Length: 164
Image 1 (cartoon, rainbow, N blue to C red):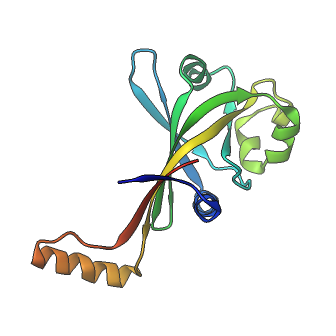
Image 2 (image 1 turned 90 degrees about the vertical axis):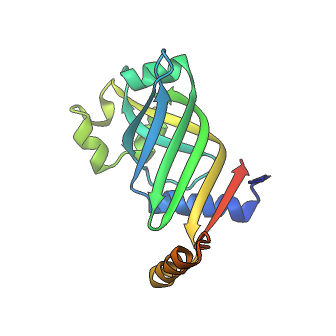
């Protein structure tokens, strides 16, 4: 598949998929190269090329990011899937923490937003690949059935890979 540079439409499509997701799996790597994925809540924020997730710092996750900032974020939004490759960093920017604070974050931090362990994992997106269902589910199921009979692959989804 050919990778293209995201235009405004692609950038907005990626932002739309992110906004429809509730949970993302963020993958970091251990010092021995093992990959680790963990679910993190998607924060309600207009996508500008960066994603943020509340985290505790210090933690194994923030240590892994300090050792190797390359991460992957994968999300599911309805019948669409999104994979974002990027670089991560940890920030304690209180203004940004205040802006993104929500009741779900409150549950994880005993002392609220003033807890010294509150941090944000910032992921700067370098590239994205997404798959979206092109047809309503009943039509897609018919296409799957036809493909089984014909031996062809079903044409039910769009797949794009873009550099951000």
